[in-house]
Amino acid sequence: MTHPTLNPTHPVAPSDWAVPQLSMRWWPVFLRNLLVWRKLAIPSLVGGIAEPLMWLVAFGYGLGALVGEVTLGEQKVPYILFLASGSICMSAMNAASFEALYSAFSRMHMQKTWDGIMNAPVRLDDVVMAEMLWASYKALFTVTAILGVMLALGLGHSWKILWAWPVLWLVGITFSCIALIFNAMAKGYDFFTYYFTLFLTPMMFLSGIYFPRTQLPDWLRQITDYLPLTAAIELVRPLFLDQWPAHIVANLSLLMGVAVVSFWVALALTRKRFRA
Amino acid sequence: MTYLLNVENLVKRFSDNTVVDGLSFHISPGECLGVIGPNGAGKTTTLRMCLGLSTPDAGSITYFGNLSMPKEALAIKARLGVVAQMDTLDPDFTAEENLLVYGRYFGMRDRDIKARIAPLLEFGALTSKAKARPGELSGGMKRRLSLARALINQPQMLMLDEPTTGLDPQARHLMWERLQTLMQEGKSILLTTHFMDEAERLCDRLLVLDHGKKIAEGKPRDLILQHLEPDVVELYGQGALELAGESSPLRQHAARVEVSGETVFFYTAQAQPLLMALQAWPHLRSLHRPANLEDLFLKLTGRQIRENA
Image 1 (cartoon, chains in turn cyan, orange):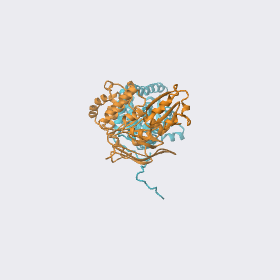
Image 2 (image 1 turned 90 degrees about the horizontal axis):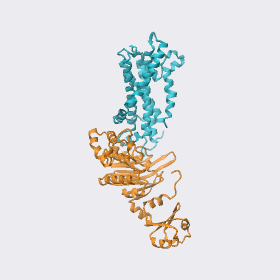
Image 3 (image 1 turned 45 degrees about the horizontal axis):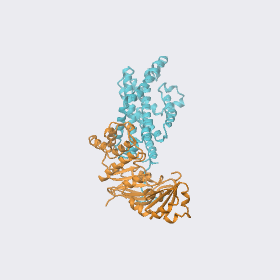
Image 4 (image 1 turned 135 degrees about the vertical axis):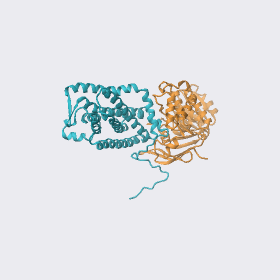
């Protein structure tokens, strides 16, 4: 095997797939997003919380009256509780996805905010990290507010629900990482329609938010075992029902694994985009 | 003497197209170097490589004597101020918030940044606009805010990509005045520009690029003396173009004749005989002036408007 001779004056372009070079430089970028958001918090709060709650009330009480109870394993669960515990995972997913797609794309592409930041001593890797953590923070914030309203409505009584909170943050992280892959590939906002229509919406119906996955044909249900939203719901729903989830390690590993792999892919594609 | 920036044999290729081709140049402390060249000459690509946004295919970029780009990009950027061609100001922030947030990217403490905001806004003639958002500012104000933002970290060197493109004459003059103030304070500047009056006014030294190569380098006045006859007579009007031909009786009075659009340019060391001879065509309009950078630029890079430029 021959090795190319390395010319000392010849700079070697680092691979797009090189290990992420992360530092605490992401923090001022995160702070920047926080400062903008503080100015727009009220409309963003209404959009992020009012809508999922309307769905919950309309479907939970409306449809719930028709459905009555859902059988989960041996247990009968009121439909609204079944729906609430699933839809909060969807809220985490949606909040993270919107932020890491539309808002991140505005900053990256439309406003050229990232270009400005990278003229200061901040690496692209840290900017992507900041966007990922920021989107997950938005998810956490939205979820916290919705949880508050759910508890106020008396939808959950178990103290175990507190454990849902860190899990939902992880759900936000996972979906932020996935969304940043599509952000890196986007030429315009229209592109995100594919992601929502072809990826998030089917997953929403297949992960057991609205009906138990036991209703699905066997082959399809086995596939849905590996969806990140399924993993999220499998972890969160039992906590609402005062139970400990089964397969904690497997489901947490799935969420974390998808997050790590997606972040790496997103970073590589973003590096490629900025190198061009 | 150590150069603030030393670039050697820089090469950048995009697939088969060599955009920057063996370029070398340097900037000394306190110097303003202007990079000029037609569109597609490689100015922006060179600047991007100098900022570590693009990796060269060959060559070296060394800052401050010993820091190499892109390897030590963060240490270099901590000491640079950059004004990009497109404003990257945050539209959701006021002028002072823009400065505050940008200072944080340099790891500065809020207290230290806040102490710099008032003087920087004053420098940019923006004191009354401290609470205004970029959307409420004029083009000139936005550029000056970008310049003020680039100064937040007290950089040793400024990189300006077409700092006055798109500004009205008054705003350009104000920008030039500010840049001259900075140079008097000893700041070094690398700037790219399309405007020869800007290059002549601000730059100690010029680098003329075309097709990714250096085609001339030197002080603006020296370059003009070196490449051009001192006087130019421009001729336009009905029938002017016929007087540019080889058989034209005016030809003997000019060292060089060029045509651009409807105008004929006669370059000469002695304008008087030419102007006398021109009296035979009283209907033609003429302009006698000293040769300037514009002439130099057009001589070196060609008068034709380039396709796909």
